[in-house]
Image (cartoon, rainbow, N blue to C red; front, side):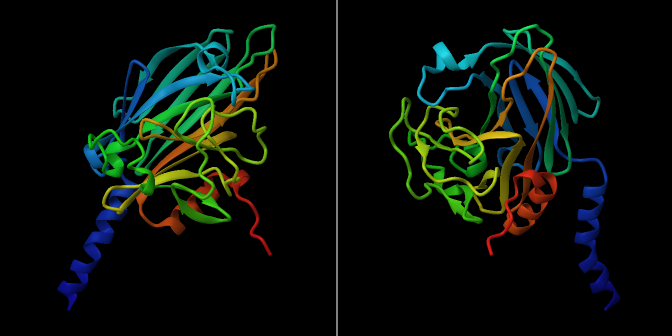
Length: 284
């Protein structure tokens, strides 16, 4: 009896030791590409275009290259000896600097950004996007030209419930197609990605997907956030909001990527703790 009890407790003890000890996720960076490494990740890694773009307002129906994108220069600053704390610096063409501290933990990656405008003119930097590539995670890596094949693995939350894609009222018309954008209530619908804009308003700022075997969830959120976005490279975004910076102004932004067991209720509880600003009160 005692032997069976000890055997039953071993998995929980091991899990606790892993959680309490050194986190298994690690980071690397090359030429604007941030890679999250982990034995638990399908394919062993997730690659992120970090950052894909800083953007101006009035972006929903304007030319991406000629109007929206604000060019920036990326500088790798440092990586800790255990490859779990990375520092980057971005300098936008208008002089704004954005310092990034990225920390890999046991089952998440934490992003802390400090944006500062040292100049005498207001910056038009309004929002920005990191682009995580999720083909391998969802089980569709290298499986053909149908870029929407991974959609049934992807989700947002509508009316407080997880809703897999394609969500209701899937939009198909925009300056650029395909893809899908969900605009939160606090953001003007003229200020988001120029891909098809879904008329439904998401319940929160969390977007994610299930792994190919449905055992894991990858999800992300940022505060403040500009939009949720399903892209054309088997990617999902929770793009963050800058809202412009006045001369001398400093703003702080935070974000998280979760790579966790496929327990939606547990994920929502954790998200509510991490991003209480984004959780709507339950309807009576």
